[in-house]
Image (cartoon, rainbow, N blue to C red; front, top):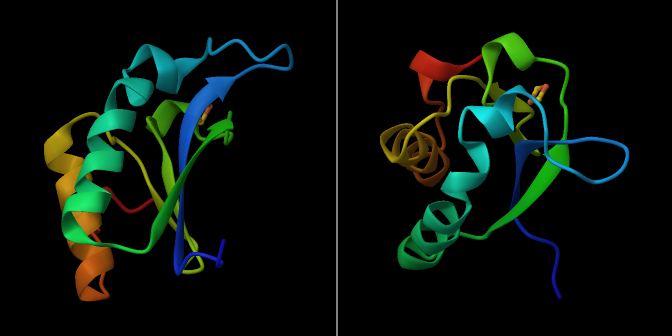
Length: 100
Ligand code: FES
């Protein structure tokens, strides 16, 4: 597999034992996984989605980080917010309303 152009990290609040228990998971972050994967495919974006443990920004979660831009987003609670972030990736900008 070639390295992706963008790597999207979605906080799933995994704890040491692997169980998703923290704030972002409770706020529904993992419920967005399928939507993000489908949107990335539909849009033909070169984005690899990975879930992570706590990114230490819990009070601002759910948190998404985009690399290599190193753009951190908070309040990613809905498909509409995901759309704004993916629009930003597509257009080379940022979803300013959600940047941390
Ligand atoms: S649980 Fe997501 S930043 Fe802490």
